[in-house]
Length: 136
Length: 138
Image (cartoon, rainbow over all chains, first blue to last red; front, side, top):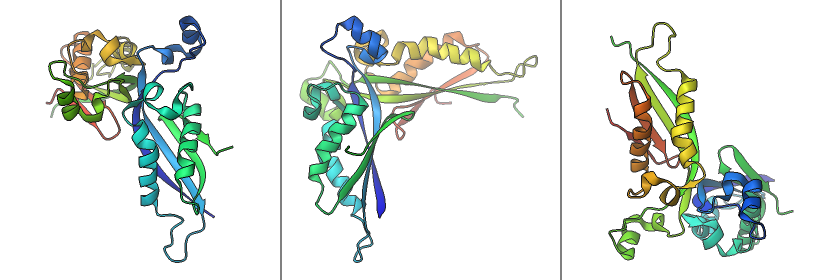
């Protein structure tokens, strides 16, 4: 089994905010991430798929095609957007990277051809903070 | 040969912004600034490198005490811009489009008065890993 990863990036605004809580409670839990007027990040997304290399091409899957699928179904929805306001699949969810990576998985997995197995997503919010998701 | 040495301090801040010229209509703004004009903002992890050049002071061997430089950048820049919306929360950009170019000029002007005049100051600001600006140009 070979694992192959494509890295994409997007820049977006968000805030961490639970609408069921008061402003003070939000500030206490989420600190400066709760700023009502948003803040933002350069996000980096690592998409890892797995499989046996084809005898014909030597590829697990053509990563250029993978890139086009990720761009069309994920990056175009997120890049230069406000994650809380502009992204349908994050509607009603708290825009943490934990929830975002799960949202991306459910957005992306159905778009991949049946011969491709999505193994993991790694999502960086800053160079020092990232999450991983394996679809579990 | 010049005895000048350059020292550098790296800091970072995360902020939202949008590029918008209020003198133009919506479609002109969208045409010029593209997706950076999104009315709901977008954001970046900005990386800031402050370069200080001068002759090391004989008593300490320092061009500038890096701890003092770090605290100065924290106080004058990071506390103002980190986890903020540059357009909405920062008075420096009330009348100024927060492009990387303008942010670098603003940061220089915030820091320069607090640094000895015998020392040169230069700002390098990364908006993304691939886009960065420098000010002033020597």
